Length: 101
Image: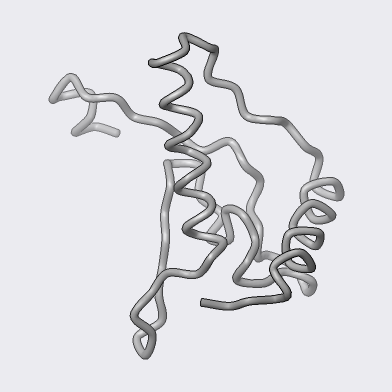
């Protein structure tokens, strides 16, 4: 954030609730690392790829930013309460067949 301000760059924070922070959570959850500072991903030492949840989180942030500047639509993230966000992540997990990359 500080470097973005110093260098006249754009900082895009995430607005999603933390994902993988409960017993039903998984690597497919959006914002599974629970950050509000911006898009963030993590891979395990024995793997060579980010999880699908991290990739989808980054793609979501990029799409929101692109719409903001290309279409001039307001930068808005759908606000969900925690039970609704968990339900959304469970549906994602089912639709992905619990794929963990």
